[in-house]
Structure formats: C-alpha cells, structure tokens
Length: 289
Image (cartoon, rainbow, N blue to C red; front, top):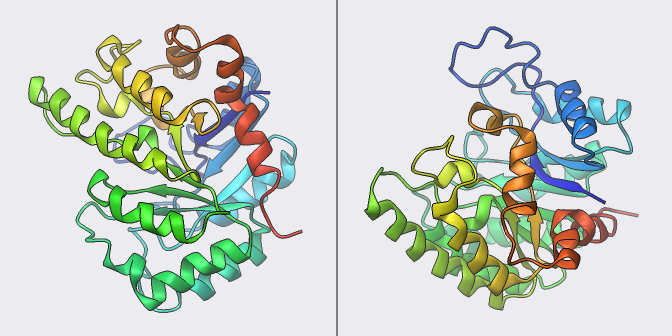
C-alpha cells in the first residue's frame, strides 16, 4: 500500500505564477493521473481555501465522489488565511465541517507570527476537544517556534493523531550555510517532540528546505531524514508528495524516490510502513462511525 500523506487538488491553480493551464494544472484528475502512473494507491488531499479557490473544501468533497477509494479529504478548517482564523466559534465550525464532509481529518495552518496562546485559550481547548470527540486526524502546519507548546496540546488528547507538515521544519529563508544551521536547530526541536507518542511527521517537502529547490535528490538534506527516522521510527513517519506544488521543482516520481531510493538507511520493511502501511491503519480508524 502506498498512501500519499500530503497533496492538494484545486479547481484553479491558486498561485500567482502565470501558468498557461490554470484551469487544469491542479485539478483532481491530474493527481489521479500521477497516482496511477506511479502506482500510488491512496492519497490524503489537504484542502486549502486559498486565492481563487475559496470553496476548495466543497470541490474536494465533490471529487471524492468520483474517486471514493483513492482520495480522502483533509478539510481546511479556520486556517491562517481564513477570516475566521482563531476567532470565537471554531469548535462549532469544526464540528459542522466534520458533519458536512463526513471527515476523517482536517488541516489547520498556523501563522508564522502566532504566539501559540490560542491553543490554550477556552476557544482553542474547545476546538481540539471536538477534534478528539469526533475522532479526527489533525494535519497541522506550524512554525518550529510553536512545536514545544504544541506538544502540550497533543499530550492533552493522547488518542488523537497529530501530523506535522513537511518534515516539521521550515520554511527557512536564506541561501548559505546559515540556512543549514537553522534547519539543524529546528530539527532538534521537532525530534524532541517525538517524546509525545501521538505526534507524527510527514516525510515530505524536501524542496521547501533545499538551497536549490530543483536539486534532487537533495543530498545535503539527508541528515533531516536520518534524524527524523531515528526519532520517530517508521510508524510515525508518513511519505507525502506535496503535489501539485512539488511539480514546480521535481516530478511526482522523484518525490517518492527521494525517500524510497535515496534513504538507504531505512530497511525494506520500515520503508513499506513509511510509504503508506502505517498511515493507512491510522486513517481507517478515524472519523465518526
């Protein structure tokens, strides 16, 4: 079983680059094509109601009806670009989204300048309590500065799986040795979070950290994969492509092989778990029965 833990599908290409095919570049059919081509069985589609896609949750939900055995929706709930970001009523909005889209999980992108206080506010506590009660997988993007605080959130809901996006590190600005030093510093923080058993990390997004985003197989970042593997093991690391964003830099196949072919320190059995077997067991247990 190969399961993509992190990809997207948008009705219209959401970024500013003037692509010639904005109405087809990021649609679900493109994702399914890449999955078929590369023998990927299932994918978690991380929704993002950004730019020209304010109804991305609805679009992905509709596409799931076409590909019910291939795609699982991870809905956008009050992410940083939302007008409702960390405003009162987040718990009710989450519960409504779970009911509307029959969710197994949702995503919450946290602002880079957030101080984390909302997590421990009455509103924040109610939000994560709903996530736990409704048996949701929480796919969360947050700056490394908040990882230590978020460990306390995860500890409060030990039966809820929390997945950190894109290696849990970055993005890190800069184009020199100082960037690698900052990555190492952040990696230590993320690896410390492995002490909380329900925190997981997506094995995705090397291109976001690389000095040159096209420089596959990112040999200068191999230490990141080694560090995470040592800290989290194969049951809490989950491969993801970041398609279609990744296609600006490397191919879908390369997003697979950067781990499968170039992380020789991972055993064959462990690689199977990372490539999908472990996350498949988790996601199939999530959701409201």
